[in-house]
Image 1 (cartoon, rainbow, N blue to C red):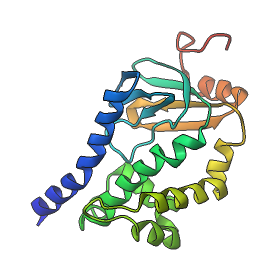
Image 2 (image 1 turned 180 degrees about the vertical axis):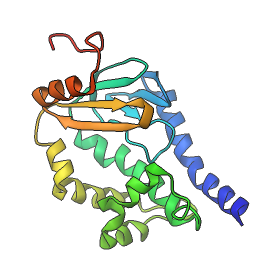
Image 3 (image 1 turned 90 degrees about the vertical axis):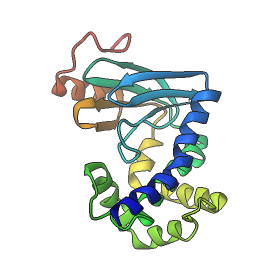
Image 4 (image 1 turned 90 degrees about the horizontal axis):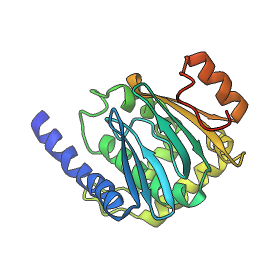
Length: 207
């Protein structure tokens, strides 16, 4: 049964990996940042894919600047409604699919999956049922409806409203535990990097 479930979830995630490959093939850039994190640019859209798991946190578009070392990634983001309506909606489909159609996934959830399971995306039963109603095990999804649902969450949820409240956001990723910090204003970012002990060599110009 476990083998069958693993095969099923593998088949469900095939489109996700094709999605990433297509982005890499069509994009202007793909930069390996270490620990599974990859900076991608697809035309005018730029973002950082999470490391190790689709449930881990990356940095959504548009990423204007980024730097990294062995331990950290720092980035400046100009939040893009276009990104959240298209790319982000696609990623959410794969996250839901990986849990809706694998009977063992929730029981055996890893730390990244548990974080998603504890988020509004899953804990809000009405939202979860709305998303599930338009996501099918054969990837025959109603993308337009899903984009509309995701858009409504982004416009109402305090976390996403915070992301879009300013023109620029600063983010920090600690690679060793895939921990994402942000969104920050520049002042909040400077205080957080000091708290984390990020070396001065890893910094943007004029910090």
